[in-house]
Image 1 (cartoon, helix red, strand yellow):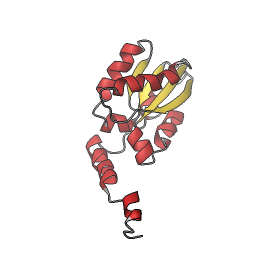
Image 2 (cartoon, one colour):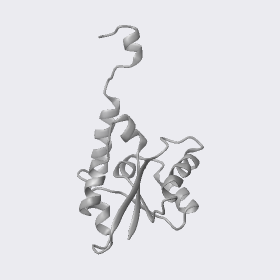
Image 3 (cartoon, one colour):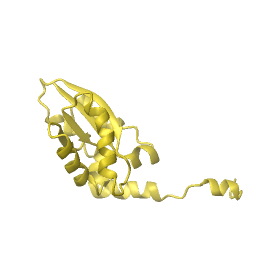
Image 4 (tube, one colour):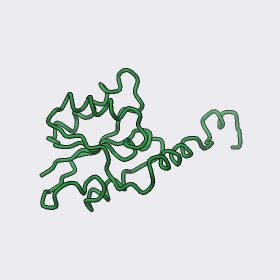
Length: 145
């Protein structure tokens, strides 16, 4: 039996509203990165946790504190979501920190099947982040209210 944790991108989940639906669907269907598990092996999703956001010097340390919440429930594997795989410039640093701190836990980069190239995905996500949106300042100054 594989006990799995999933690490999601904080920017994608909190700023863009990603609910990990594609990751969870492919987990249930054993597609994407989950297709690599033997069919006879039972997969248990123990939990999903966000990364600590784009790091400062403490990024890996903050990540390890968050991952401890999953390791206490005896995970065997931690999957980095596709958004981390395609978007995160710190994924190698995070992977090294996890493998060093938790040598018994395997790290897999990826979750769901890739529908577009990482380059196209990055381009689409960048457009989402860069679209104009209102802020509290606009309300205070009564702009377009």
